[in-house]
Image (cartoon, rainbow, N blue to C red; front, side, top):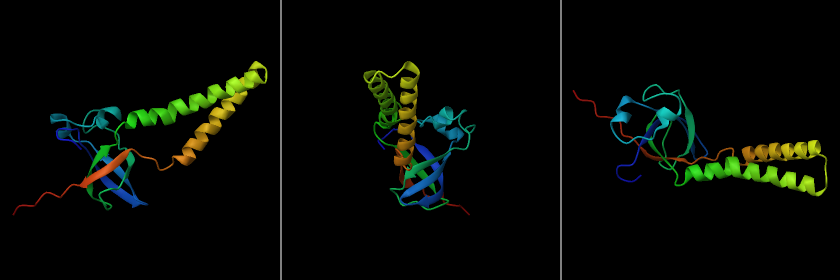
Length: 147
């Protein structure tokens, strides 16, 4: 992450196949400086967010129970929008055009478009099952105990 960029932290719950299941940690300290906005996006302010578990590439080799710093891949929002909206919508429109080209009645054309849309979403879910734009940047060292 670049200097001054927002930071996101989480606790690793499980590690499998190079991916880590991480519960995002939102604290009141997050509001004092640049932060990722996850707390607000998931239903509250800092410390009030729902417990959200995300999947992240485990580039830092974190183990279960450790606190890690996370980052989000470059242009992740655009890539996710393409995958979740543009591709399914495009296949739906192409199915409607194909149905109109073979002169199907309106309800059959709509049914064909809906079936292709559903099939596209099922295929995307299967293909992108472990796709994530989050990655573990580093394991956060535990604070030293004094005394």
